[in-house]
Length: 381
Image (cartoon, helix red, strand yellow):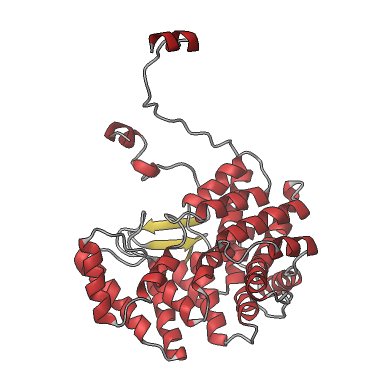
């Protein structure tokens, strides 16, 4: 793309270009801020549950005690998988990418439980919030062991439900709290690529399942989702903090990309990073594994020293999830379990004040030229 075109578009990838309005989230205000409907992310991550935050994003206000109790009860009732969906999941091979499983699960659910009109929005979204952990855990176990796990658990939280299905055991309370904080941190983030995709789809007046399927397909790409998986794949190779420093310096010298650092919007720091870093430390102490935290902190220090880059939300999520016993391949599906709240809220916001999203493009092809028939082209050749 030429420099002229980039300037007209506000930079490559629409950087700096305002493409709409939202009342859901601020990102990068005063360099580092992140709020959901006006509430600071730190306050929410420390004082709320993920279910409260999901309700806030989807309904528009924080629930009172009775509303939250009723909401949690609805979520618990909606965790079960329809038999036809189980059959689909059982036919997806073990080597499939888990993000493809999530995309397929949501799309097929849309066939079974179609949102036939927009009045079904909240019902459909609540169902998706409840069932996404069941979809990924059911496939994960069946594809590896042939076990048809029970997906209708009694856990009070979505995070606890996921952890119980994954391990088959009562989840540690600290793990449940850490998972809730993680889901809050990933729940919403303004007009990122997957959210914008969901809004483009919503602007055509498509159904909620199509919008979410489109968003998952966008998050599947390695330039948007998957940085926490890539970070884990990197840090688990290092034997200690000194080994990590040597390796990072060598990678930078080779101009290799280090996943989990820097951000398209934040300029000073990612406010989610410090919050999940604290959880990573707490969890490391719980499981008695401080080495991975030391390695992660050394990587953070080297990147700041060498490139003046800060960790984004994904980097310390890698070690936090690892300490909770979560397989690396399921890191990004957890992102989906969380971001469904933000995506859905954006779909509704788009519907409330809709106009078809149809941007223009700067043409860079040939000038107008005459068409030459196949016969004449053959003769000229």
